[in-house]
Amino acid sequence: GQQLNQSPQSMFIQEGEDVSMNCTSSSIFNTWLWYKQEPGEGPVLLIALYKAGELTSNGRLTAQFGITRKDSFLNISASIPSDVGIYFCAGQQGGTSYGKLTFGQGTILTVHP
Amino acid sequence: DSGVTQTPKHLITATGQRVTLRCSPRSGDLSVYWYQQSLDQGLQFLIHYYNGEERAKGNILERFSAQQFPDLHSELNLSSLELGDSALYFCASSGVGGSYNEQFFGPGTRLTVL
Image (cartoon, rainbow over all chains, first blue to last red):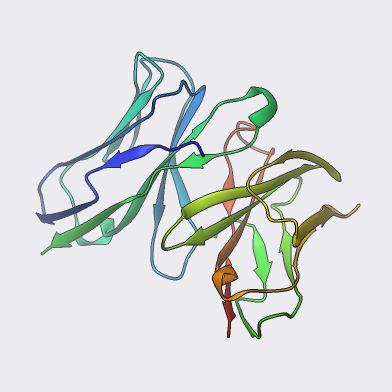
């Protein structure tokens, strides 16, 4: 089925460092979403993107909707220990798939104090 | 707290059995989605209901079915369970106080099939 390629698979960083992760696809998406999941919980929506080229921030998080509509990027600045978790990108195509989210494999983030 | 509730939190059952997972969407949301999360497949879309009607289906097995009731809560029924059905099952909802595209997830039901 449809796949989103998310990288890196995991990151081990020091507190205070910036983090970048991305998601790519061979298909076009109309909406990109970024989620964070912590152990034993459901994914929590961080940022939603609706237009190619759009850059949106949520506190220390910034995400971009790629110009080609086939990719998206998430940056976290000045990481802190509570940023630990799994970050997922998700894309939505519309049409008959309207509502369906296709997820990336996730990026596991570990922050060392 | 996303406002989406799911019960039960954990479910342990045997192969061949049938279970029902329940989801209550955020107040006012008309859309409910079901997803399965497993180690090998990741998060996979199963099905979408809007105001009681099925809108889209993903890779949902024939042994699985869902419905959305007039009060907008939804149930996912899993029958003839197999070991491979062990996974986390999430419900999400959308529609109120944001874009229709923004889906808010519940805490999930962890299903273990022995």
